[in-house]
Length: 171
Image (tube, rainbow, N blue to C red; front, side, top):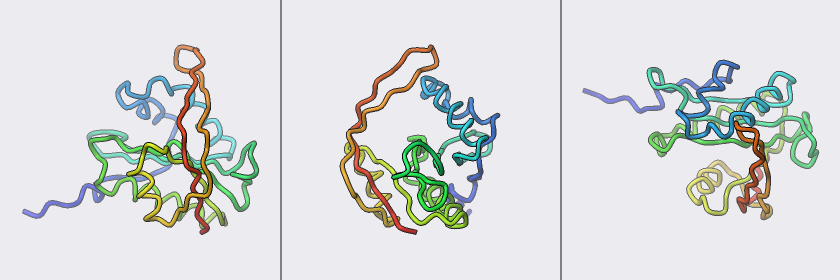
């Protein structure tokens, strides 16, 4: 019997509003509920794209968000620059090519939109993700302090300190 690679079963597609609860991954990311809803509002306004990886019978096992317009024109400008964020694959499904499929799908879409530069941040404590981006041609261009905040599902402001590397790729 020949076993097909997991990626042959995965569906990569844009997210719908009904996907938002699935992004919480059975409670692991419930604290990001408002962030996911805010990201989806940006999709509805044409400011962002949300990609998901779905495994039939299991649910959403990966995600990648792309901001194409926003407050920081050095990162996004709707014309030539885009910013990838919120990129993750469930631990059980890592190293199976799902992240690569998500990233390639997003890049192909951005090329179709005429984007020329993609930026992203990767945690300084996440060498595996950095290696993935480097395999795709991203290069470190600067350190980022990685200090940001969000309002959790209970309405409390949470501070995050994730030192990161800014990476960019010309496409």
